[in-house]
Image 1 (cartoon, rainbow, N blue to C red):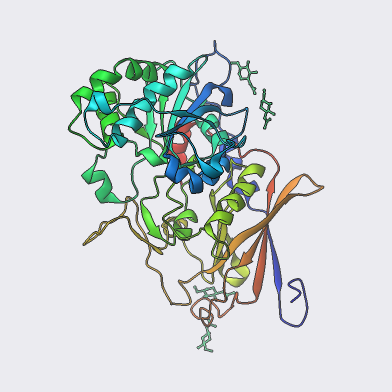
Image 2: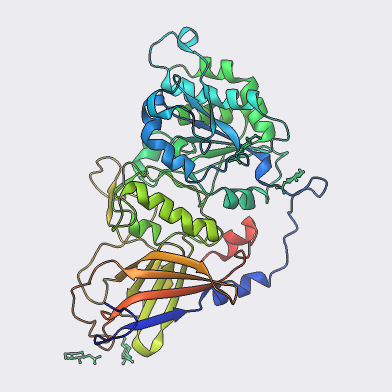
Length: 430
Ligand SMILES: *[C@@H]1O[C@H](CO)[C@@H](O)[C@H](O)[C@H]1NC(C)=O
Ligand SMILES: *[C@@H]1O[C@H](CO)[C@@H](O)[C@H](O)[C@H]1NC(C)=O
Ligand SMILES: *[C@@H]1O[C@H](CO)[C@@H](O)[C@H](O)[C@H]1NC(C)=O
Ligand SMILES: *[C@@H]1O[C@H](CO)[C@@H](O)[C@H](O)[C@H]1NC(C)=O
């Protein structure tokens, strides 16, 4: 079927929304709390990554890391429990180089040392490569990192001070069971140089002190806490302790650069028309064009038809046949489930909306399909309808059905989204 014309009434909607959303921000003066002027701006070469995985899982998880790893550019290592075998040889050039973790069985005196191996790798990555290191970034073998955004965020902090960045679990009880004070490991956590150095130097003592703990990220927090540093949680770091369909979670991202995603093995494929192995590279194609706008939620109203558009850049567009306040659209529709059983709310670290079959509440859903640069030096992203909504029009707002929209095009400027400073994010959010 020709989507651009023909018998059925088909609309093509062009949205030029990203120009509006950030103008007021760009007028603000730069903040005085800038990093020290003596050192050069932070770039990717100052970040060293330590990823911890197992030989067994790497066979299917390497695709997650290869989707963001930049050979010969990103620095760091993958730590494996034993040497790679079978289809992992010869070792892929698109993967980080690997190291076999130090043998800790004698030191710990037990067979399963997985948790200790993860903690100890902080010291091992520091030991292997810390020249001009500013930020040590730790992750799992299924952590998906957005490294340009990481650089942009970290460049706003002074790497010569003590910082421990990470993310909470989305699932409230995980924070309660482990700790609200820890950065969850799979989401990735980031240590500034002096903190990484002190922690690496104190590693044996740390592991001795907390022998009784068997979660790596909890032990890490405990040792960092002993050094006198506490977690700074960043809104772009995501553990994804969720199950099922997380598409609506990804469609209501706060205005903060997306830094990580995780658990793509566990959740349903994030694009409903694709399987897991195609979904991640598809998302990364949009990220390759502009990481700064990835998943940033922009809300736009079309008053003539009483429609609201909620755009998650590079991922989805939701169309409502009613004017919905931004304060409401910032809550994700709860299409996902909790990580573990949770008897009663609150389940999540954020508010949600329940899915609805009320035509005034239920969105028409579109997913990112293609992205390209135009000759006018804009980025054009197209989104196609996921499925027919199968509901009548919303009557209270004028009966104007959006059923006939099959595709939505979003224009954005071919330059980075203006980076406001971290402090301004807190004061101007939403
Ligand atoms: C990153 O910064 C260093 C200085 O600290 C500089 O030598 C290097 O060229 C920069 N790299 C890139 C890719 O800009
Ligand atoms: C990385 O560098 C090595 C040696 O410096 C080179 O042989 C290899 O082709 C490079 N790989 C890529 C993907 O650029
Ligand atoms: C928009 O919705 C309001 C009620 O919310 C209604 O009064 C108005 O007529 C609608 N406008 C159009 C153009 O349908
Ligand atoms: C929408 O259509 C219904 C049924 O045809 C009608 O009762 C209602 O008044 C219409 N709403 C508006 C706002 O026009």
